[in-house]
Picture (cartoon, helix red, strand yellow):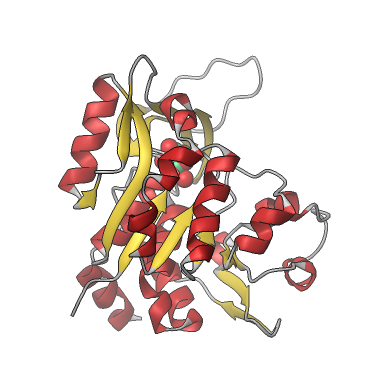
Length: 299
Ligand code: RIB
């Protein structure tokens, strides 16, 4: 049987991660407890998550012509992600994320670097790749017109287009119309669609003009189908070590299992995300297919 083909359009970052007993207040200097360098970027993370679960994954992205860029490319190849459509941008630094992990949560500041050199032309150059895909997915760490170009090609070839609207920004109606499934958390949904942040998740979903799978952290996920009917998927109980990349793991798994129907895909995405937070680093805890199966069997 042919593997499920997924095309990810997205960012590739080096994550510089500091662990701290708590988050510093503005102007405060704290002594941290550890520092690590991990492979990250929402696009790369989604790609690795999907590849570990058995999909045939191509990433359309960009890295700089620096040491980080080479390390990021090497990692993607080691994870069996096809990097033929990753451009190396001369004289630009690779994307970088400054991450603080504390209090069971994280703060992230991304400096986009080469990720913002990814253009609509880069996407059009990969039209055949998108035409051959089963699912196309993107996030918002690359320019919006580049994401829209990907969504347009996905539409042209009737491929499901999954958009993780992170980091949050107000989405143009054009992109909402091109999106098959939007995968925000509650805050991102409010910003993406211009809704009040005070609405309940159920009310936000009711007001959404498109199909949404909303991630609710330790509360699992809430989603609607084409008819607007709402469903919830409880989370799986684990002891979190590092929640960085949990959303990316969720998205990667959702794309892989979409062919099994939305309910099954959301359940497996919640399980994959739960496993992912039990090890450090955005990609460190992403499960292989057999680990996901074993985890679900034990529930
Ligand atoms: O979603 C987690 C990711 O966000 C990190 O890997 C970091 O690079 C930022 O893109």
